[in-house]
Length: 328
Image 1: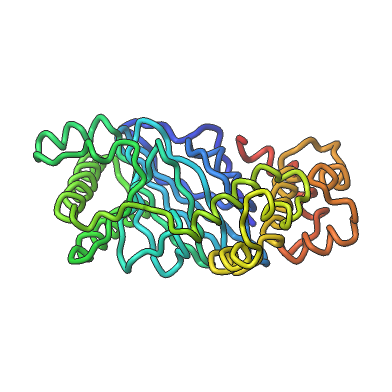
Image 2: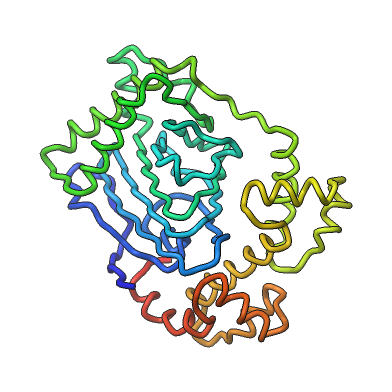
């Protein structure tokens, strides 16, 4: 897979150069290109191809993310910005444990953070607008944005499909070919369009309230993520959290298509893969595998290849070229 060199994060200024596209072997490598605090875990077997296209200006940042496999994402957006997602809902399994309608505007809260499960072929567009500019425009257009501050929310399009589709098309077009002359109008068009969408669709606001299944999933996920460096018995989690095994197993299969034990194994394999790609060149595969409580190397290599479509040695062999190409 071809990699594109870059030496700094995209600068936020009006004379921003052309949009930049990067291809990465692991989505967490994108931390070198953005200010997002985000963690990706591949949960579908097969080679994962990830492509990110970025564009940045003084008050606007655009990101178009495409991933070829099912992935679990958690994290929070950059501070000082109000961030919105316009997604292809056919490739989103859930967002904040909610099923999305045909067209939705996602508001990423810097206070709450977010979690999402994307399906194979995910095609997501993220628009970040500076809080300073939005506050100014909200006064000009008499639109209240105070309710957005720090909150993770979902706005269903309902009767505004055309507006949301138009905003997505405008942003995707800019990512394909942005010119300095159009930056000011692009910022204003996207900002006003999003503010108008939220203002006219205020009654369609969906407040995220977890159901029992979602609460069970969250509690188990928290425990699994906290024990990423060791095997943990699912029976122990059920006992400690007071969750029936059948309920937990059904929740994971509904959300991810796999059981909690497999999910935990995939999580640890993802951590191994990232460490192999970005750790010291002196490290051995067995040392990294042992760090995440994999001790049977034959089974480990088999599981690794089944999930990622390559052997651990192949990941390690690309580590040095990647370090030269990315700031991690």
